[in-house]
Image (cartoon, rainbow, N blue to C red; front, side):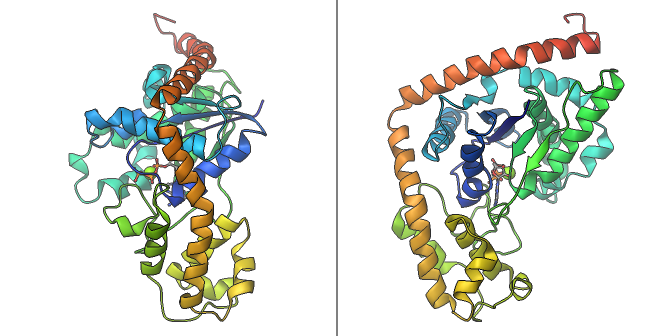
Length: 333
Ligand code: ATP
Ligand code: MG
């Protein structure tokens, strides 16, 4: 049966890229397939997180899920650390995945930068934990941004090797990434070559879901662009990454394609386009931010939802982990 799994790390304020690349897809898919959405606190600590703030950040991500329309009566929403089976399965997968596979992962290279010897081992093996997150539920569909496509390929490689090595064809499905539409890779507002990220030190690089109307408008006004008017073809737009990004953001927020947006705005300068984009962004994100603040004001309710989700996730994951342990030949399996 088709099943959805995805998650977001509690590493800071959620931004437009997370919203368009991930959250809106969760909300859409929950009505089509059984859906599991977690808050990735195990992933978050691959880079330093203030222990005093981590739980609050988990609640904030949960609030963003609810605010963007995820329904706890329909989808299972839970904190990763409340389901120890993720970590247990990740260990098995650490022994299935090959070093050569992980050496190819570009996210590690991007995040580690020049000093990879100073990064945690956890950051290196992060995609293996991600494979465990997905396969513990035998998920078939994983809605993510474009940046996660390579990790999904690795998940498929791990699933196939496990099935082969332990002689159980079809034990794990080979899940597919659900990556599509103009919001799959939202770029930084300061640099058309870098993706919008929570961990970017510049506040002006991203629009946060909790930004108020003034902040949204100001960030769009200051977004880097060129002085040319918008072109009339996608080919011409592709040569101008910053312009392409703003058009893609408009398209994603408005549920249209970039081509449709160009058809409307070709020949117009950013003096016209940016204020229209700002109005659209405020209209779409304002209510989400407001709902997020409303959910955040009731942490007891959020905790209740997360506890119920964790209970259900543990129930669904337990038999799969038990079968894995038996297949591996563990003493306690
Ligand atoms: P960090 O910098 O801490 O890695 P992040 O912004 O990359 O934060 P994640 O928690 O790693 O956020 O990713 C959560 C989801 O959001 C993933 O599905 C990821 O692919 C998606 N995502 C992240 N950034 C973007 C982006 N700029 N455009 C579209 N999707 C994105
Ligand atoms: Mg990321």
